[in-house]
Length: 74
View 1 (cartoon, rainbow, N blue to C red):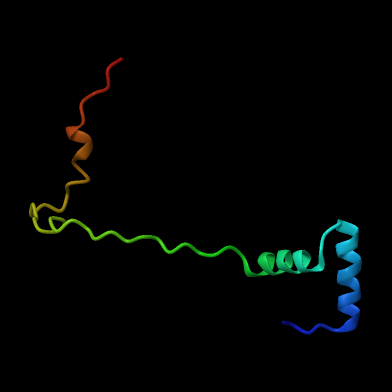
View 2 (cartoon, rainbow, N blue to C red; view 1 turned 90 degrees about the horizontal axis):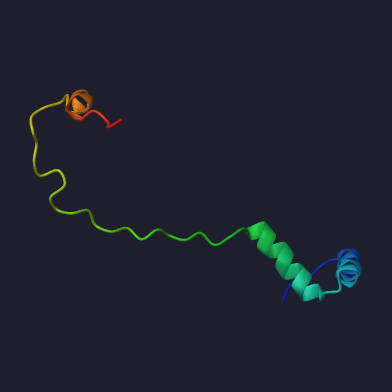
């Protein structure tokens, strides 16, 4: 239950009548707009245990990647 000033209640009644809806529906809509959507917490899957286990010892792997790519077919 909420309490509202009489003037606000009057304006809500008028607005609800203009829209052809109930005051309750109008208030729910306004609260939903104000509160925003419910944030979905992303599901976090554990990373495979193999990630980070091996090291090539090289730090320039990205630089040389273009040399390893084959030429595109025409």
